Amino acid sequence: MTDGAAVRLDYPGVGSTEQGTSPKGYDRVLEEARLGTGLDVYRRVADGILAWELQRRAGLRVRADSPTAVPGARVVSGFGVGPFRLPAPCQVVWVREPAPDGVPQSAGFGYGTLPGHPARGEESFEVEINSQGEVWLRIRAFSRPANWFYAAGGLVTRAAQRYVTSRYIEGARSLAAEGKSQ
View 1 (spheres, rainbow, N blue to C red):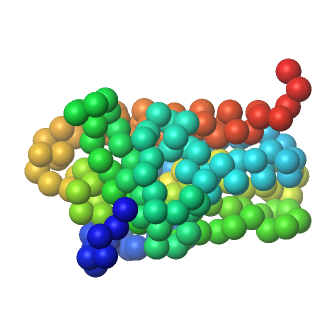
View 2 (cartoon, one colour; view 1 turned 90 degrees about the vertical axis):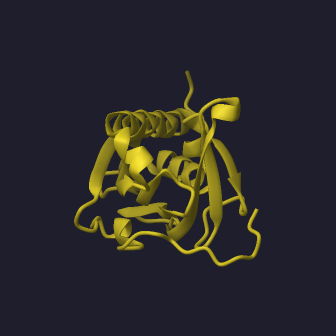
View 3 (cartoon, rainbow, N blue to C red; view 1 turned 135 degrees about the vertical axis):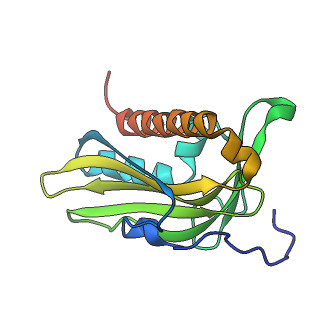
């Protein structure tokens, strides 16, 4: 997937979604959703997040140079249909693997935009199990339009981001529900 050329992340604050911070002048997103209870739910969601399942379940076409999120992995997700598909290249900047046991803990990853993405910034996907065994999804992002064209479509761009974020949450809910008897 990569051609060997060095491509740099094109925004300040690389990795800051891991701490929940963002650079000044960037729009921020923080969405949290309760997914259920128990280590089984937590592990299913953690494994899905790290295997790009939230992106796939959100309806994005995913091409990655690694089957799981690992630091430095590149992924291009496509949004749209046919020739109207918009590529969104990113690079994983941090990863937290699930621990073998114990609560509380969290797992997930953050990735940052690369040149060619319609935005500049970072987004993270994290699942947490707290000391009461409750499982929560947390999506954090900070971004700004990559150029004047995307800035001109500000309302449409923000609506698209809200829509995709809601689809990520639905994908996490479906992962959490898998394996439960109906």
